[in-house]
Length: 444
Image (tube, rainbow, N blue to C red; front, side):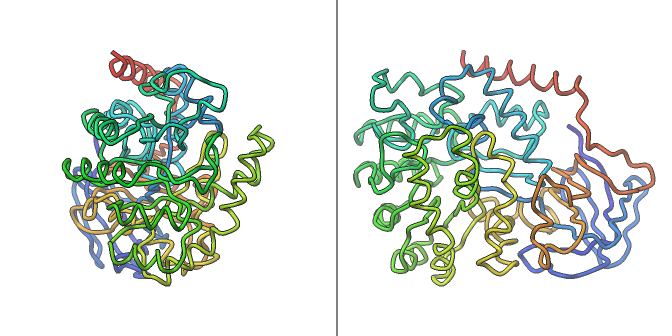
């Protein structure tokens, strides 16, 4: 969809790269990117002006750990739903993420290239989607949701849109799976290397994949000029994975100081997801999550805030992640206030801007207020450094959201520039029809 030529006036700039507190700045957008930044008024014969009136202008938020196809809280049930049902649900989830100010998200298990292409083409209204395809899991691992008495073939879920991952065992099989995901457009590889909360047959402390298997996955990713993200909780599993070359450590709740220092030395980046455990603790029983999963959730939830302190002391870069499923996606923005209980506010801001861009290997494209960067921007009604809850909720305190230069929300009086907070039913229907076509092409 075409971008808008805009001038954003009287902004208070804030990002993690240097702008923090400057007032009365002007920013011009052209051709979907930031074209000019000035402390003096900018004029243009073609651009429309939106007066931010001292609001805080930030880069669009980045969430580095999402599952946009997780349309229910039960991944095993989601995996068996028809692809069309999952596509409808994913379109809704992505739209909601965008309206919370998230203009880029990294899907770490589930989303496919046709879904990303539908978003790029404007057929789905949502954030820019970085994806790994299906996460790799061993038999009985964190993406094997068949349970104790379900003896269907593991292949039954490999190519379903609702499946979070695919099962592969042995060095040859993990090489094939990694190569196959890359063939289908995966931008990085995700490996399930530890037990998980929602999976039915693996306690948290189970280590998953052998060292040769992990090394083979890392090698295949490196051969394709990309990296490996791994699902990890326990200290031993994190240390083992980082020594094998894993770059992106998801969760890391049970990490110890020595392993955090190892991550720093090896250049690994952490992506904690604290809100996932708080949301499960709050709502999962009512949503029908089994008692065994609730118990596993508490095993990691109670250590999550301490893990932030350990990682910070070691100097490990931490990106922003949420890892929510189904009905729990509504808590996405609560991650900001949870982290702010432990970390300085500027570090929380950096986690969703410049640190997130570094993890995505998109520094200079997203996550900053610089000329030449994608014009992904939000205007906040207040100062998040003073009140992190302004980034919370459902985007209630965001008066302007811009993605790639295109205004998708505008509640500011700006001389007649149209507000786009609504989403007409006819547009919704057209987008869903296009999504279905894209998914049918994928299946074919």
